[in-house]
Amino acid sequence: MLEKNTIEYERTVLIGLITRYQDEEKSKEYLDELEFLAYTAGGEVLKRFVQKLDMPNPKTFIGTGKMDTVKEYVDEHDVGTVIFDDELSPAQQKNIEKILKCKIIDRTGLILDIFAQRAQTSYARTQVELAQYEYLLPRLAGMWTHLERQRGGIGMRGPGETEIETDRRIVRDRISLLKKKLEKIDKQMEVQRGNRGSLVRVALVGYTNVGKSTLMNSLSKSEVFAENKLFATLDTTVRKVVIGNLPFLLTDTVGFIRKLPTQLVESFKSTLDEVREADLLLHVVDISHGSFEDHIASVNQVLDEIDSADKPTIMVFNKIDQYKPETIDEDDLTTERTTAHYTLKEWKQTWMNREENAIFISALNKDNFEEFRKLVYEKVREIHVNRFPYNNFLYPEKYLEYEE
Image (tube, rainbow, N blue to C red; front, side, top):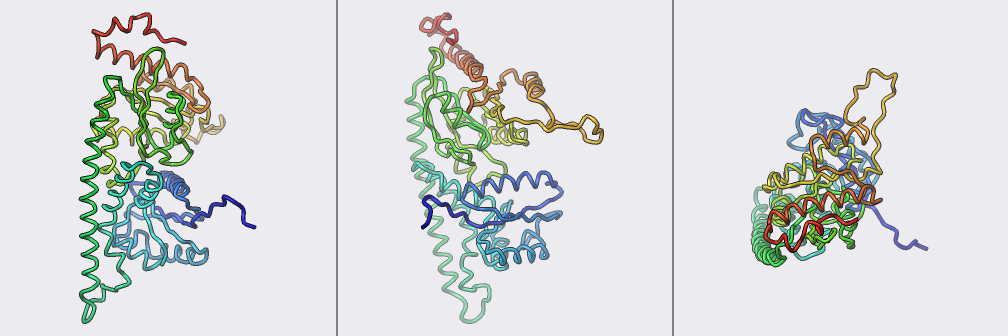
C-alpha cells in the first residue's frame, strides 16, 4: 500500500564552471544555491559536474570530454533533467539536448519555474508569464527539431518554418497583451497606494530566504506565508503596524538573488514600486550565511537600479541564533584570519561603526526583538514628525515615547 503525501522528486544533475572570473570557492557557492533552487522546484540532485575553462564553450557550454562523462552518468542513472548554473544561449541548449537526450534547463529557466509555482495573485502570475514568454521567444526554433529543418534541401522547406513563424507571432502578440495588462494593473495599484493616506511606509528588502516574511509576521502579528525555501514570498504584502502609539505601513517584497534573470528584473520592476515609494527600508540580512556580504552587495545593486539606494535604511542582521563563526587552531599559523572567523561581537563592532542604524536579531526566536522595535519606532517617528510638523499637537512628546 502506497504511503500518503509521498513526494516524487525529479532526478537531476548540476553543471557549473570555474573560470577566470569565478574561482573554485565561488563556483561551489553558486552550485550550493543552485541545488537549493532545484530542491525548491521539486528536484533531487544526484551529482555535480564542474569544469575549469577560461570561458564557456560557445557550442556546448562545457568541453566535449566532460560532456561525454555527463552523458554516461545521465544514461546510467536515468537522470531526467540537467541544470546549468549559467544562462545558456538557444544554440547551446539545442546542441546539449541533442547529445544528452534529456531535459536541459539553465538557472534562468529554473528560477522562472519556481516563480510560476509560487505566483498566487493575478498580478504575480501575469509578471511571471511575461518573463517566461520573453525567455521562450528566442528558443522557439530549438523546439522544432522533430521537423529537421536544419537539413534543408528539396522537400524540407515550408511547413516547419511556417509553424515557427506562426508561433513567434503568437508569442509576440501574447507579450504585447501581457504588457498592456500589467500597465492597467500598475495604474490600479498606484491608485491603491495613493488611497493609503499619509502613513509612513516601511519596506522589507533583502536576499531571498533571509527571513523577511518571518520578520513581517513577528512585527505585524499577521500570517504571511513563510518557508525555508527560496522565493517563498512572491506577492507583495502590505500590513498596517502599530508600535507604541504610532501606526505605519509595512511591505514584504520579493527576495533578490545573484545572477537574477534579466527578464525577471524587467517584469518585476513594477512590484518594486513599493520599495521606490517607501520612506524607510529594512534591509534584512541572513548573518548565518557564509556569503552574506555578497548578498548585501547584490541587494544594494538592485536598489541602485531602481533609484532607491539613498533611502533611509536600517540594516537588520537576522538569524543570530544560527550564526557560527569558523574557528582557527591557535597553533595554526598558516591559515589567514578572515571575516569568516569573526565572532558576532566583532561583527557588531564593525557594522555599528560603519552603520549607526544596524541591529542584530533572531526573528524566529525574538532575540533582541524589543531593541529592534524601538529602533524602527524611532526612525518612523522621525520621518512622521518631519513630514507633519503641524501635527505635533496630535502626537505630544510624552505620547511619542516608546511604550514597553
